[in-house]
Length: 238
Image 1 (spheres, one colour):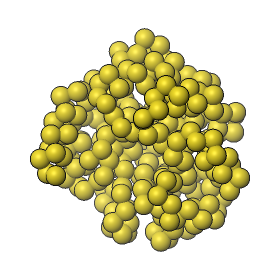
Image 2: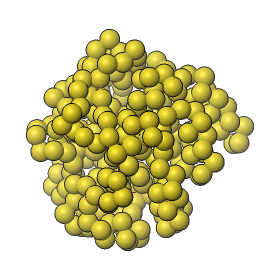
Image 3: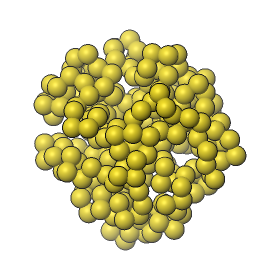
Image 4: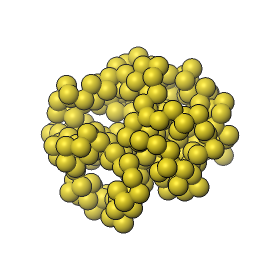
């Protein structure tokens, strides 16, 4: 299972996401980074482990309050070997095409940003696109047909439980199992609630392909030894 660190961008800074209440997010304070500057934070995360992939939420773009394209370019330039997944609220063909043309990472299509199924359906066969199925409580965020038609989904699926982000509530194993049961073997990535190495082990046992996490890394509840142990298990299994 792959652990993917997360940074949430707002106003050119990394903010601390908690329970999806974006209006209350403040600048990140972390022992891993001297500031909330995105480059400092990414360096800090990579000091814990050489993560191959980073997830970025451009919250300004998602909320139609501008964007963080300059910051995304800085991250891309400084860490050229890092695979970056970016949710910037793309909701139409033109916006997604512009992002792909900019070559700033793999676009994440967030269900919460969609008005219909057209963008997801157009990219169902894409190996580059990631679909995020977003939930707030028990409510699916976005057009219900996106959730009801797994045939529209691309290969990689994030199951994002917004109320559990930064909450320490643990991953939503029941919802993950529900999505897995209809996903047809697609890669499923858990987002929201991961607290520690025990949660990573539970997700591994559940057959999840990866986990997105931030707070547990910054609070040092998942540390280098945990990640190295997971890497050893993967190599042994291979």
